[in-house]
Length: 156
Image 1 (cartoon, rainbow, N blue to C red):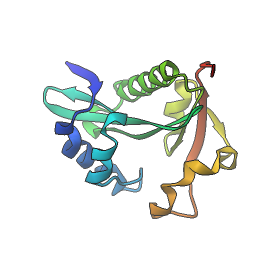
Image 2: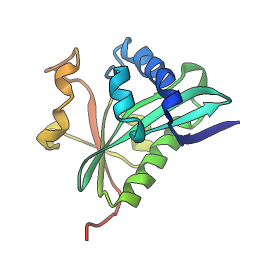
Image 3: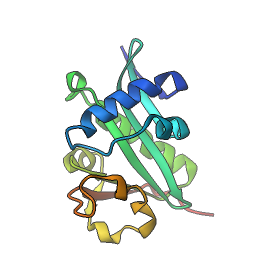
Image 4: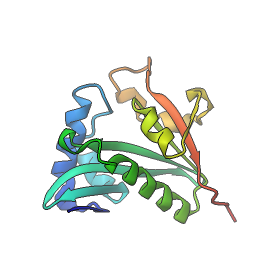
C-alpha cells in the first residue's frame, strides 16, 4: 500500500536519487543533497513500504505565491494517479497556508491541467521565481511550460 506523507531526513538520499534520475534526462532541474536537506520541510513523499517512489515539494515564494517543484514519480509507479494525488495535496497545503496562487514550470503540463492549472506566459510570473534558473543547463532558453492555479485563499 502506498502512503503519502511528509518527508523526513531519512528520505533525502532517495529523493535525491529520484529527482536526479529525471534531471539527468532533461526532465527537471537537478537538486543537490544540501538543497534537499535545507528544504526538507517543503517535501512530501509517497512510499511503497520503505521505498520512496515519488516526491514533490511546495516551496513558498511570497505571501501569495508558492511553487510546486521536484515532482517525480518512479517510472514503475507512473500512470497510477500518484502525481495528481501529490499535486492535490500541495494545493490543499497552499490553501491552508493562505496562499492564493500556486505555479509550476513543467514538461508535463497536461498532468497539471487535469488538476485545474491553467497555462500562462512565463513572463507573467514575478521575477523572484527565476532565482534557480541560472543553474539549469537550458538557461536562458527555457522550454518548460508555466501554469498557475488559484486556490481561493484570501489574504487577511
